[in-house]
Amino acid sequence: MRINTLDDLQAIKAEGVKLTYPEKIKIMVGMATCGISAGGDKVYQALEKKIAELGLDVALEMTGCIGFCQREPLVDVIYPHKVRLSYQAMTPEKAEALVEAIKADQIYPENLLCRIDQEDLVIDGKKMVYANPQPVALPVEVPKYEEVPFFKKQVKIALRNCGYIHPERIEEAIGRGAYQALHKALKEMTPKEVIDVVKASGLRGRGGGGFPTGLKWEFCYNNASDMKYVICNADEGDPGAFMDRGILEGDPHALLEGMALGGYAVGAKEGYIYCRAEYPLALKRLEIAIEQAEKRGLLGDNIFGTDFSFRLKIREGAGAFVCGEETALIASIEGKVGEPRQRPPFPAQSGLWGKPTVINNVKTWSHVAPIIVRGSQWYTSFGTEKSPGTTVFALVGKVNDAGLVEIPLGTTLREMIFDIGGGVSGSNFKAVQTGGPSGGCIPAKYLDTPVEYESLGAMGSIMGSGGMIVMDDRDCMVNVAKYFLDFTMEESCGKCTPCREGTLRLMEMLEGITKGVGTLEDIDQLVEMSETIKEASLCGLGQTAPNPVLTTIKYFRDEYEAHITQKKCPAKVCKELITFRVDEEKCNGCGRCRLVCPVEAVEGAKKELHKILQEKCIKCGTCFDRCKFDAIIVE
Image (cartoon, rainbow, N blue to C red; front, side, top):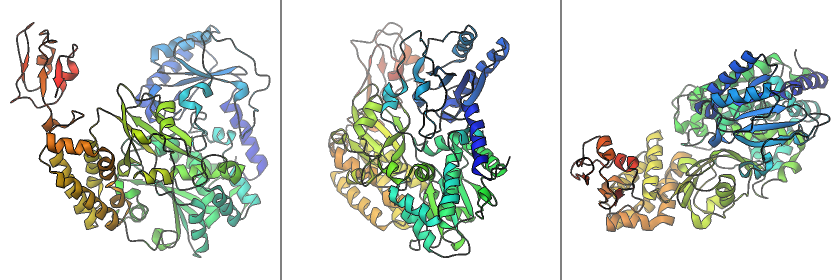
């Protein structure tokens, strides 16, 4: 059925609500990339097999990323009129036991993470999912969703439907409110009014620089042209980042509706989603979503019976990090080499094929529809004065509870890492890097820094696209700088000399320091050269590539000096500056270290003191990892 009127949309919404919250037990398995890689597909298959075997009338569905990636595979069970239960770290065996409990009209008591009582379920801001919610007695004490530290401080706007809908079923997205904003805009608002609402919301680009979204749209709107374009930058290439992927795999319609709204606002009839080929599941679900939206008349000609027509196409990127820069991305779509060009002119003036173009990333587009439906004042009630709203982070690294997190801007780093992330795993917190490989490393004394554009910039870091990597005292900050610089050096397109040659020179000096052959003068030279690269590079890659170097020198200069003057790596990471030896007091001659050494650098008879031959040792650390008696010492 094609959707032309509000009644049509409401009819599909009613159908979607019934699918999302059916009148029978529904089991949902997190089947984004994170869930599948943790074994979610095997859990799903086990559930499917057992349900068929027992002949149960139970709805089994997949959903996107539920967010708590550390606890995957995640399985949610909705008991109509009663409760929704979330299960963590599920296995095929436990999945079968869960189905058997449902058959026996019991609640499976193991692996429970949290519950959502039915009276707390909300659609479009209204508690209207089930009538007559019934209390349920649980076999064990289970915290409510909002009591779980990982979820407690989150506010989900971009991730509003992730974990709630089947991402390949448009009816469920509509059941949760999708395309209401598009109908409102086309039927009740002019393009300029849409832009004004987005401007008033203070929404800033969630891809790095934080440029005001509404202002960018206004520039494009004011540039007259026979053709205009909107583009989604889904070329997410930061190490440890999966924010865009989470949205694309969990709620692709949030992106499609946002882009259609942007197209209407600026006068574009065509849009492109530029997504890297390394995201096959995201691409698959995007293709399905576009096809479904076209069949329903939500993309294509005369949307909602108006004269607004809008089409979307997907372009797959080959994985070049530099194509995350907007002018390089445009060149890639045009079939040219993905290299940045000088700005101005900016894309809003002359972008794709020389026409006015708006580029925003997945997270930015996904915020637009709720802003149009609920208004700019609602949106500015979250976040800070200069950075309203929420943003999505991939919280990873040495943190107990890693996952996909959406927080109001202004939340502190401490709250992110220790409240939501559950603290540092196994050691002491040392630093956090925000903004991906181009971000800076922020030390413990600045943990109370709010997460927003200006504050992070003052620390020498950036918001970036939303990566947050937590480090502890087992991380060498010189090596960390080298790791990220190596990434940006390899990903440089080579077009401009400061980036191409400058990052290479920085890398050579860092390698010398980690090998114990650097000088104190190298530290000052690293700073001077980094500043030059930032000032002279053509695009954002080169302009931000030195950030890890500058911030690690600024906050951890003592580690650089230790590598140079003491020929020691304080974190015991840099191979050329550490030595492995056997502790005579603890070694009992078990032989495990000798058996696993790949170069036979350990000698000693069974039950006798072992010894590491330094001339043969390659410092791989295998002996250290395998010793059960802490008898291997790293110096």
